[in-house]
Length: 333
Image (cartoon, rainbow, N blue to C red; front, side, top):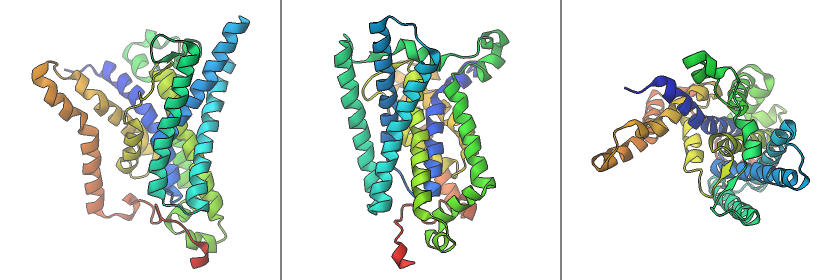
């Protein structure tokens, strides 16, 4: 039997990067932009935060000063948000202003983001003179991964609900806030209108370009925080090239699974996080190797099943925005 008090915290930790990525992509897709560059954005957000943390720690070692918790958190986060914002602006410039194909642009940005991260990650490894191909940011990462001091004293309740770093709780707050904005505010109504029919929204006086730029850039910044969480919290401050795996693509798949609803993404990301590591809890040995590979397929199989079910139901609220992936030509309205 699987001990849920041990599995759930691990599922949450695995699911938080997916929650950041899916929440950011949901906001982006609600504006009609299909950003397949989320894996690259998460990679750039992570390496940007690593660069800020690395030079902050280098400065501490040279000056002999004591680390400041506020700066240890603020510098990597600002660097992460800036790098992710630039990726969002690049995507919008290409797809909204120049009307480039969104699928091709997103895939190109994923390739660019991974290459960007590996290049600067490798450069930092050379600067640090490490004997292993990785960077350990132990000073700054301890502030990101610190949990509530009394969590260990509350047994299973503390383990399941209170044993995470602040970025985990921030991901949930952002998802809840995004759901409220989309459902309950005029801004959310305008954003959904732009995603459904930009020509009609434009006729109603809504600035289509502003909403596409704003939603995509904010979505990229949120997704970038997922990459920062992975390095600073999940990986305990250790950066290694190509260590992200397919988490960025899982985040995009999670958008379909949640039928474009950020609040549902909170629970779905934890579920996906559990499915992502469930193979670790099956018997090991050579005779079980093929079975483990089948277990690794579960998140993708579940996504395909949900896609088939939502397509068969054909309910309007379960479908993607009508103009998703399509460029808007104002002169044609």
